[in-house]
Image (cartoon, rainbow, N blue to C red; front, side):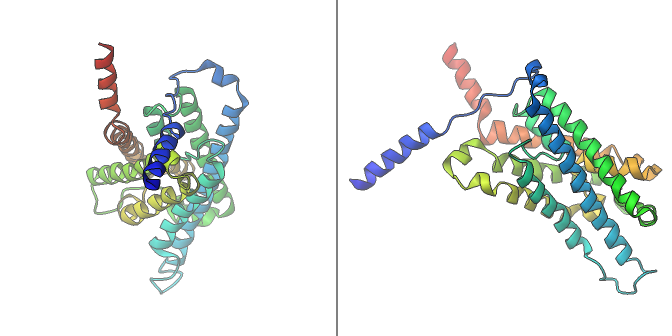
Length: 285
């Protein structure tokens, strides 16, 4: 009897505790008058700047430490594992720091996926992407300013398709890698899950950072791992060499496709958005 009451009370609590938030408006002119929008964009700018500064420095540092002309030890430096930890760890830190201000996107593909799911408005999405790209450029600019010789010598940490892989393989790697990341973002920030499991909002940065770490382990040998158009764009702008620009489209098209697939999968398959919409249509008819 006690268990029955407990289950009933728990079910009642959950039904009251959770409610789907309304979709963000496509265009909200009033949003442009709010300081919170610009504060969030500044947070995205600074976070992406710090992300590129630390991670590109790590890539260049490893390239120098493992350079045969500098060291005869092929295992010298942090290795691919260390680079993956740098990217994943920085995302974990920065999402934790900025989630309460901007949502902690730090990636145009994440912003695009959340826009498709109507989690952010078009105005906010565009402003975030501009801020992220500007932050990435400034972050890479700081790296070049502090380590100019190494920056040029080791290709500025720019994403490029590695030797032995064709463009189709590179595009596929970026699509799947970004799908893993954006799918994790949706799962970690799902309001229904947050209502059921109170610990999820606190832990959300951890699986997101871990997803970035795992994807880097898999795709560094293929493309150097983009899965973030701002990261690839910022490095290409500052490095500004032909090879970086030749492959640049892969690091925009792939992540945007991967983000779109993740948004559709989560919203309309896992969350059954299409079934709910169909049921609402039938009830109104």
